[in-house]
Structures are given as structure tokens and as C-alpha cells.
Length: 206
Image (cartoon, rainbow, N blue to C red; front, side):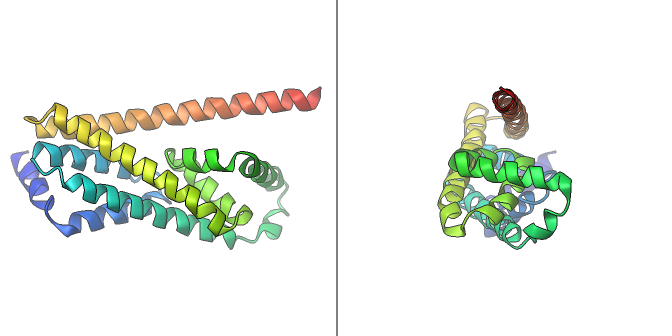
């Protein structure tokens, strides 16, 4: 375990660390199973315990750039999907219409919130690509990426400050916090979406 920590510490001053984080975040924009949040938090915690707080700024920059690049790629893919062909499938018509309406009504809130929920952000970026113009979408996406990167790096930093003499425990705690926050956000947003759908359905029936 000491050798693992020594290896991790040696990477803290390397530009390859930021390149790896950026690449990991980009992949996470398409593969939710990739734990980019947890890795950033763990590295942030280790950086603080190893007395390299400046690494947090690099992590923030890499995470923000990777998130915006990956989300932009998802948006551009969505803008090139053959919408008319997709609408030939009946089960997709309702989904696309509902997604379009939600983006028109609550676009800013949905785009910003979706960045924090892995599976949701993929769908939102794809749908937004077929609904919004890139110049209208990118300021909101950039804001979302800045908030997400700040939140993730801060969690890692806080975990590191609280356990400065136990770097391994700080990394594990940071990862646990990241997983917990992700699950809570996912369940909260899902519950709110279901309640909203129920309210809208009730109004339409009346």
C-alpha cells in the first residue's frame, strides 16, 4: 500500500496527471460507469495530504475542460441524429416531444443539473443537440461544467484537509462522499421528475 501511495504522490507534479483526468472525464461523458468524479476527489484529497494544494487548480482546469469537451461532443452527435427517421418509431415520438418541451421550459435548470447525474447528462446533451443552437447551449453547459468541477475538487480538498495525516483514508473517504452525493442527487432528481410528471398528468386529465 505504501508503494501505491508513493506512486500516486509522484504523479502529482506531472502534467500527465491532468491529461489523464481530462481524458477520463471525456470518456465519462459517454460511459457512466467510468468513475471520473471519484478519481478527481481521491486525487484532490491525496494532493492536500501530500502538501500539494496547487494540484487542485490543475484538477479543476482539467475537469472543466474535459467536461465541456465531452458534453460538446454529445451535443454535436445529437445535432446530427436523424430526428425524422427516429420519429418513425412510435415509442420515441413521445420521448422526443417531452424532452423538447422540457428543454424549452426549463432549459437552464435541466442542463446545469444534468451535469451532476451521469446517465441523465448523456440523454440531455443528445436531445439538446437536436433542439437548441450550440451558441445558446454552450454558455449554460460551461456554467454547469464549472460548478461540477468546483464541487468535485472541493470535496476532495475538504477530505484531504480533514485527514492530512492519513492520505489513504482521505482518498477512500473522498471517493465514498462522491458516490454518496451522486446517488442522493440521482434519487432526488428522479423523484422530483416523477412528481412533476404526475402533476402534469393530473392537470391534463382535468
